[in-house]
Length: 194
Image 1 (cartoon, rainbow, N blue to C red):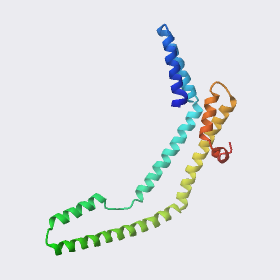
Image 2 (cartoon, rainbow, N blue to C red):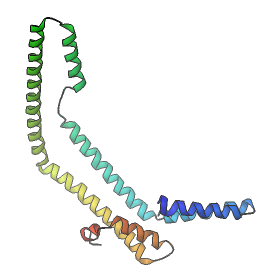
Image 3 (cartoon, one colour):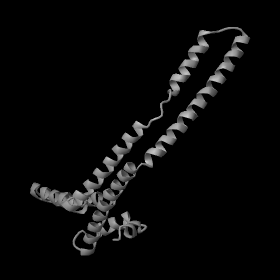
Image 4 (cartoon, rainbow, N blue to C red):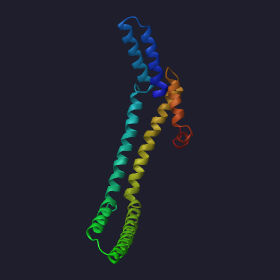
């Protein structure tokens, strides 16, 4: 939009303003600039705006649902900063001879090994829980509904763009270019039967 619509129209506006001799001409050129930008950016087509808003809403709802899912299935882990702070405190509080230091290093290695094992166990349990959750029919239905809703809305949006580009008219080249960019590999054409 920036390169194909706004920038060329802005250059056109600047050129027209330089040749304008009255304030009314400047206002007229500015009004033409705004109208052209609105139409070429497809902001004057209410059907497309509604479909695009619905697509964005479906994406936001899906994102919120997945965020809720991941938050409810988060691994309980001690943050790394907290672990390193504990280690620092334990090394600064007890300074002793070389025998104590060797025991400390050995204890730290053992603690790290235990922490790693606990983490692996937790991750294994949680992975299994998540596998069970995503295999449930409710979860599969939810994902299916989002997928179906998105595909249907996207299909309507793309079909409207294709129809506008085929009808011709003043802004047909911009819409055709947009369709080509969105469907550059013909994925949507084949997937959505356009």
